[in-house]
Image 1 (cartoon, rainbow, N blue to C red):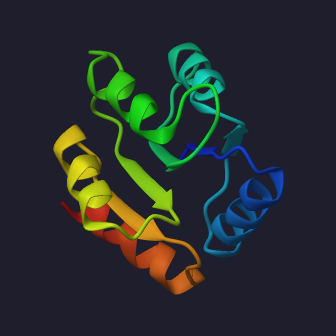
Image 2: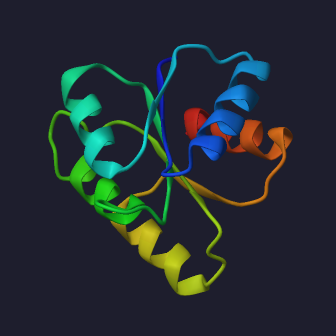
Length: 121
């Protein structure tokens, strides 16, 4: 499975990519913001996007909107990773078409459960 991990913090990208590797997922690429992610998504084939919510240039919500409004990308499942715990943020993400979200900090087991749930539906 080819996964695109999007986060403005290089350390967070590295941690999540390491967790994905430990869980048996290979082929993970990284992007530092939504602008870079959208460019990569339009130039290669990805099976799954994991994106931070708060990023400069293009945040996770804007990236999600762009993915869902692009006929070539709208089928790609998106897992939103956020430190936001406000109910309104979660509701907004659901309305925009996010497949699932996970709140930082999280365990490898929680990440695996979210991925399994997304691909089971």
